[in-house]
Image 1 (cartoon, rainbow over the protein chains, first blue to last red):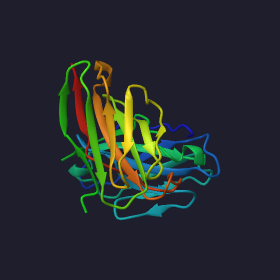
Image 2 (cartoon, chains in turn green, brown):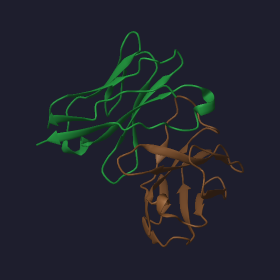
Image 3 (cartoon, rainbow over the protein chains, first blue to last red):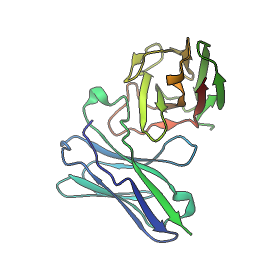
Image 4 (cartoon, helix red, strand yellow):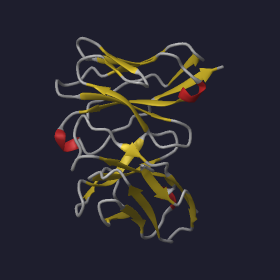
Length: 112
Length: 116
């Protein structure tokens, strides 16, 4: 899977929007961009994924740059429960579709 | 639906002891996975099963064996535990055989293993 770069940590105030960036400058045309998060002492949890167009679901929005070299996960109103490590993951070659390749992610702290 | 369940939640072993970690899913998924997560790091794939009756090695298979008992269950066995296997182990599943690029994986709550 192609490499992604995320900030180690970010802070947000409760009930404010959060924009979590991810750089993936070596992305190929068939790579899907996935986001997972891991709450403390829990297993990873799917958040959202996309290919080229921006995506929305009940948890978040995913904004994908026009050249696809970066993307941003948007939490519209952060809550204390959103404090977690957020992982940006690219999935490309079908042979590697079996696994998710996790980097170190972004630790999001939500301040009350 | 319970989703993906794992037992036990916690385990302490002495070096050289053996144990089996159990995983079950009730979503009728075809693919199942075992990952390990060391402190401060991302998850790494140990073994996976693309469908019932098949298993393949992942990134870090040494010291482990797996069994896909049926479509629901996928167990991970440590034959002779070592301190380097101290970790948190996560089981996951996904719907299609072998997985697809746009597919979601569903994770269990994890088993925390300490090898002394």
